[in-house]
Image (cartoon, rainbow, N blue to C red; front, side, top):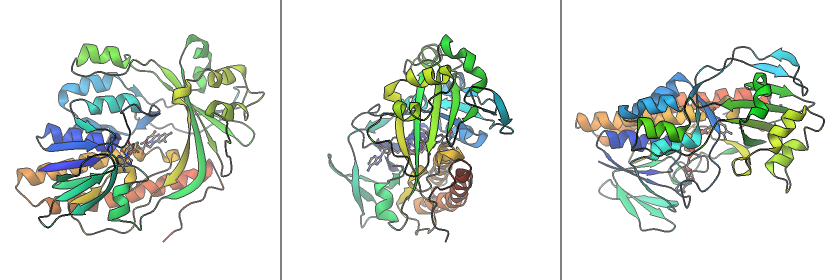
Length: 377
Ligand SMILES: Cc1cc2nc3c(=O)[nH]c(=O)nc-3n(C[C@H](O)[C@H](O)[C@H](O)COP(=O)(O)OP(=O)(O)OC[C@H]3O[C@@H](n4cnc5c(N)ncnc54)[C@H](O)[C@@H]3O)c2cc1C
């Protein structure tokens, strides 16, 4: 069996790793000109299902490394005023495992064949049941299965299920990260907390690796090369619709809304790493109509893009990768039909994927009351 995976995000790479480990040929085609071509380095909280899914897709020899480059999610969930006085509690924090997306991506890339500068533009299903994918800057490739793991604006979805279109909630997310130096240890009670200002909130979360990723890989898995990054603080601000940035940088956008706030909070934003600070639009995709199973399927944000306020997009993409991997490996082992395996995956994915989107949307109004939500069917 030959599988072409479109998109080198977390979901596509986890699937390719899982298939590769099982001896199934899987190549990845990524639109970006290089793997580190743009901002990818925010921290993610993985719940037990998401974390187990990515673990299951990785060779067991890398499990100790995976454990060493993560941290446990802090249960600390305070609400602080802009001068860092406690004014409330958010209730029990999310439990799970915190990972850096960029570091996890590097681990997932190891040993795979990933073609960059390979933007899919369309595909054809051939008379022998195979699929031929077309790309903007390279020759077509044929496979038994084409998996669209190409994110919220998925080109694969555009052909397979054109009626499934993303909804722009109008909400913008400003996100950045700042090295966790001694200067910011005094802010520690604010990590995992919400700083509630007048009409605007700043969310802070620390990423503290058990061992810095590069050193951990050298010690535990010399065949893996991980980026040389240290601990950092992720800060994020959600801007309501029309909270346009104009020409400002992500840092300026936050600084202009936090005048008079505690000097350490402002210093944290001022000292951010500009390459890892950006503005994102929150778009969602809700899977509604199923298509007849065939040699093309979707995975991750391409079929169920959530709002980051739900904190479940990566978890669900990784779960897809693991479920699809299991269905395909099972079909190969039992010499069963590929299309039956794809249908089995899609039946499960539509159920939990739809639920993940609905949960993330239910959480959005608590942050942004006037977000534009998809119309209910
Ligand atoms: C700020 C922020 C914080 C988040 N925090 C969390 C969290 O705590 N927990 C959680 O579970 N989720 C979180 N998420 C959501 C999570 O990051 C995403 O749901 C997840 O990364 C989706 O993975 P994916 O593989 O489906 O898609 P992506 O990671 O979007 O990858 C898609 C890939 O496809 C490529 N591509 C696109 N078009 C083409 C094409 N035509 N041809 C070839 N390649 C193409 C893209 O370049 C990209 O590399 C967060 C998201 C954001 C923005």
